[in-house]
Length: 233
Image 1 (cartoon, rainbow, N blue to C red):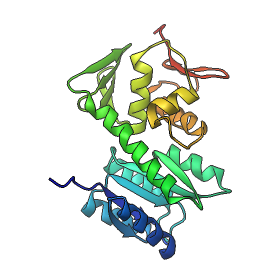
Image 2 (image 1 turned 45 degrees about the vertical axis):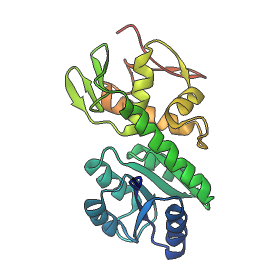
Image 3 (image 1 turned 45 degrees about the horizontal axis):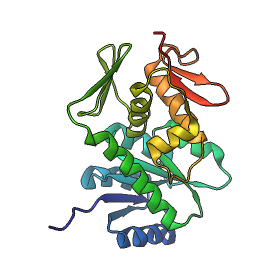
Image 4 (image 1 turned 90 degrees about the horizontal axis):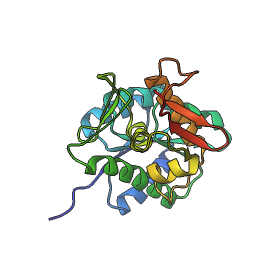
């Protein structure tokens, strides 16, 4: 039986770049549709239900940041990879803050983009393979079967990346993980990104689960090293 193709939506207003990405994804066996604006992307998400969205920041009309926000609200489990200009570091941070899982800097090698897509999909699959299990600690619960997170029995919606990070931290409360450890465990050892990605996702997690994100009681910074889940709750 032929393996079902993974749906990918490519959102890019420059036709040459959009076609270049689509051709390479098609060659790798993905089912690809395209959108040339933010408005078209939002409509395509409703119809196509993509597992992966490749999303340019600079779009006519609704920009990529607003598109990311709207898609993340509708599709919390989709992989969103944003495309940013080389000099725009704030674009990368802003995209991650709004719920993107990853980013690529233009111009980029299409093989690296495909590697990023596969790494993010593997990350989601790792979360999904364990069935009928929970991880609980200090009022926090991870439902590994339903991919849901609870704090004091109140559900808090996490992105797949945020869920994967919490799974790493909650499996070993008190253990300090370096940023490299988290990158390897969540994104995979062949991930090409930088450690800033971890910091942004940790900041988003704190905003969601901490009573006071500036004075975190759960996710503790280990200065000069990384992060850990505090034992002394």
